[in-house]
Amino acid sequence: MQREGNGHREQYETREHDVLIIGAGGAGLRAAVAATERGLSVGIVSKSLLGKAHTVMAEGGIAASVGNVDPEDSWRQHFMDTLKSGKFLNNWQMAEIFAKEAPDRVYELEQWGALFNRTPEGKISQRPFGGHTYRRLCHVGDRTGLELIRTMQEKVLATEADIYMETTVTKLLKKEDRVVGAVGYTRESGKFIHFKAKAVIMATSGWGRIFKVTSNSWEGTGDGVVLGYDAGAEIVDMEMMQFHPTGMVWPPGVRGLLVTEGVRGEGGLLRNSEGARYMENYDKEKMELSTRDVVARANYTEVQEGRGSEHGGVYLDITHLGYEGIMKKLPTMYEQFKNLADIDISREPMEVFPTVHYTMGGIKVDPETCATNVPGLYAAGEVAGGLHGANRLGGNSLSDLLVFGRRAGEGAAAFVGESVHSADIEGDAVRTEIGRVLEPLEKGGEGESPYLMQQELQVAMMEHANLMRDGDSLKEGLGKILALKDRLPNVRVGGSRLFNPGWHTAQDIRYLIQISEIILRTALERKERRGAQWRLDFDGPDEELGRINFIVTKNGQGEAGIERREIPPMPEHLSSLFEEEKAKA
Ligand SMILES: Cc1cc2nc3c(=O)[nH]c(=O)nc-3n(C[C@H](O)[C@H](O)[C@H](O)COP(=O)(O)OP(=O)(O)OC[C@H]3O[C@@H](n4cnc5c(N)ncnc54)[C@H](O)[C@@H]3O)c2cc1C
Image (cartoon, rainbow, N blue to C red; front, side, top):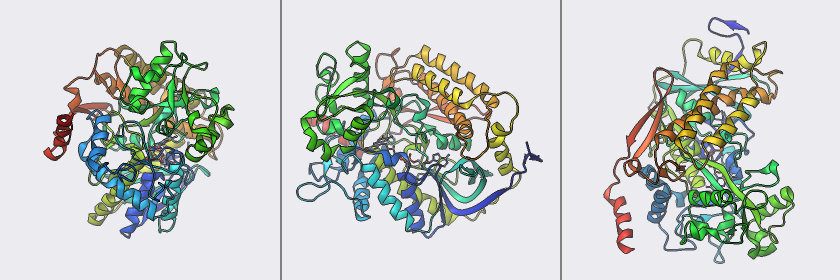
């Protein structure tokens, strides 16, 4: 290895911006618009091509109480639905801001050129979704994310922001207690860049890839949450992973691919192998439109108890819409099943089973500004935690990206405005990081394959941290993950730096292991059944734990320290909403 002092001799480029945004999904792009509007120099880094983030995959819609279809809807009802679905672990301040601002962000998107489906009167159309009291999801067929990202991309390309595509950030740089930039490498050439910045916004999304069966793309390896954690950021609610009730099960190559909740929103029915609409045994009132945690457990239980379909799922039937109706409202689902499984969903039911989908936990932020506890570091989108509590409502992510993406951009811009510090760093931090990233490539001799380690990890997480959990199994899973952690220094890959997927996986595996360890540790601490955390060794929710978030930070020994932090009581104008509802019932 080419070393000089403590670092590598590699040459690297330096780029400087006021605000560096890591991630070019909905959250990162909305933050970029906000920061450029303040006249700041903005850099956006994305490890994939622009437009390839999870946001583009979003199907069902964006939740906002615009009240076009159900005029009775209001921010108050959206707020209450979000908290009830999150089993009151949510940061209520975030939820209030979110519910109040979501309609403005949807109208803004429309003004910027997004073409939504329309009601007969020409208003933005809204469809029902699980756990939403009213029809609330503004949508573009089942391609809402594509329209959102197309619109945001056009908006960003009209700004002066610099975009670094296919560039992976591997470390945040700090000067004293402040984040002052990052180190990354371009995937095409393997060359390194030192990004200097007065503020950094993390918008890197979730970590579904710690599980084998997931709706997430290859990008979902949780880089941002670990980069933040390593820099000293607090992270919250990490035990809360969302299993979406309906992923594809057949053929095996597409297992886990999402079947949008829009199918149930448009009247899709769930049946078991006996033809029974079993949701009446799990949520008689809301049936198929119950919250995701409830429907996922129902689907899982039906299969476990022997009432599953041929390929180990349950049946989801949308045939009542007919070919015309499906092509109007769910064209992607039609093509997905026709092309991948040779199934015509206008004639036969789909087979579906839960798939890992979304991460409620993440970097803890200030609700107003999206600032983390580390000066100069901001976070928004799926990588941030707090808004969704123990279970996210469908459609609430896309509006989250726009509401808090904008706030992160403005928060970071205000910080830059007040900042008198330079982003220069002293010492060898960049070269030391380059040496660390190149180590798996430059190390000679025998070593561990990052692919095989990733497979082992995914199998362990499926076995020990699935949607039903118990203490003994979680402990066994933690043992397996810690053993993988011990093997991390042995990771070695062959080949060159040019588009070398093995080398990229050697970076990812560190994140996957760290996140899995934290999930298992926090899942062991939360000794109850609540939302996505369903402990079979406990009977139900625990009253005291209903007022607690688990906050994880890296302690002085480099270990994950867990703090139980009490959720502050809701102010009267919010708590009275629930009391009034109770009184009416
Ligand atoms: C199939 C599917 C359907 C969905 N449908 C809906 C829906 O209908 N409604 C809804 O509300 N939600 C939906 N969701 C959830 C929602 O799409 C995501 O939660 C949301 O898009 C995440 O947006 P984001 O901006 O946080 O991250 P993303 O859109 O995933 O963007 C993350 C960005 O970070 C970059 N990145 C990651 N790591 C690094 C790194 N180390 N260095 C540099 N760049 C990095 C990525 O390349 C990418 O540009 C769906 C999700 C999926 C997977």
